[in-house]
Image 1 (tube, rainbow, N blue to C red):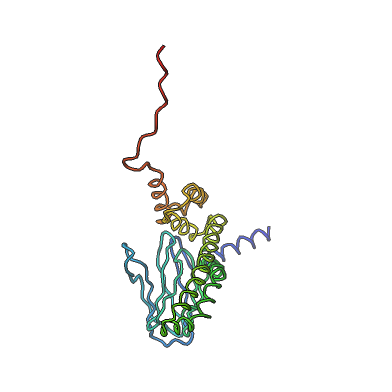
Image 2: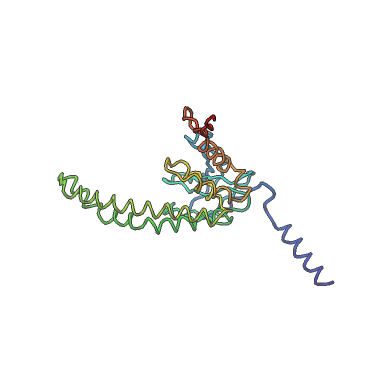
Amino acid sequence: MKKIILLLSAAVVLISCSKVGKDEYIISGTATGIENGKTIILETQDANGMGLLAKDTVKVENGKFEMKGTITEPSFYTIQLEGAQAKIPFILENGEVTIAINKDSIQKSKVSGTYNNDEYVAFNEEITKVQKKLMDFQTKNMKAMETAQQTKDTVVINKLMQEFSKIQEEVGVASKAKYVTYAETHPKAFISALIIQGMLNDPTADVAKSEKLYNSLEESLKKTKPGIAIKAKLAEMKMPSVGAAPAPSAPAAEAK
């Protein structure tokens, strides 16, 4: 009996310590080395996807900042530090998201704390490994390309461009395979829905494969904006083209 009471007490403590309610998020940020008063802006794309809208703005205080709000489904947002040249992308969703800003290199800032953000970080690390060969080639040959362009050495330029195109094609194939494998094995991840949506934007998309991946998604993801867009796109792609010739009918039996 005493054990049961202790377990119930522990459960009550866990529930009462939860800082986030239903459809709520908290962004707990650290901004070590950044002076007080610097502005932090939470941004998202506008309805047309052509610009950014500020959803919230706070000031850094003693190396920290916090934002709270409500959201009904996961969505990509960015954090903009006043004066920084780059933004910090992350997935805003229910729960507590932790963002540690690296003031010296914004790209090295860390995001964690929720399932989708942990998955997003891990997935980006895997894609970076796949694309490393291409990045290494660019870094290694940047100076040679600049020199060849200045001296108009078309032989060197063409050679480097051919090598780059070959590596780019290899990396493209490997990246596409990585995207598909991820979507197949992570039906609960928000980025799986984004991957499927991206696949359907390809004119050569395998509709049957895309539909199978969509059907395997967790039901909550199908109700998100990307999920709804995928369903609509699949329906559109499966419709017969306007003006298409009708299917041939079965030949009539000869009269006897």
